[in-house]
Image (cartoon, rainbow, N blue to C red; front, side, top):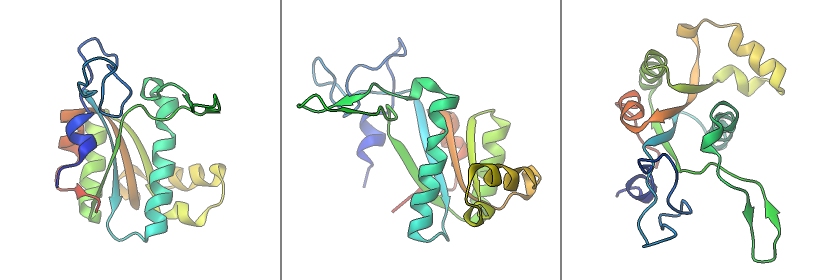
Amino acid sequence: MRNTYETETETETESGSETGSGSGTAAAGNAPVRFDTKVAVLLRDDLESWQRLNVTAFLVSGLGTAVPEVIGEPYEDADSTAYLPMLRQPVLVFEGAEETMTAAHARALSRSLTTAVFTADLFGTGNDRDNRAAVRAVGRDALDLVGLAVYGPRNAVDKVLKGARMHP
């Protein structure tokens, strides 16, 4: 089964701007919105359901500060109630074994892609300061990675995720 977001909303126009709302329908002509970049999360395949959700939320939260252009416009309903802006493009979620995670991490760093990490140690902390200290205490090659977020050109992100499968 093909992922609708992956097939309809990932390639940006040549000018670098969106051509529509991000729902797959452009403002004019019903052409899909396309992005030349990809936002992907890779989760280790042995996580509990609550951990998968928690890790995904934490990982994508940093993208907007590092890459502000990934954030879309604020939302508003028909009653003019304002809502926060969100990522302007889909987040594709993958899973893989520990070896897949380690290889993806190395490939993301070697390609200088925007990357966020979540280690197993972070499940035992309760605040941002302790989270950062837990990551800082371990060398890059010894991190017990359970999640990784990557942002960059589609083809580069695809190469980073080699061996991973779409999350069920």
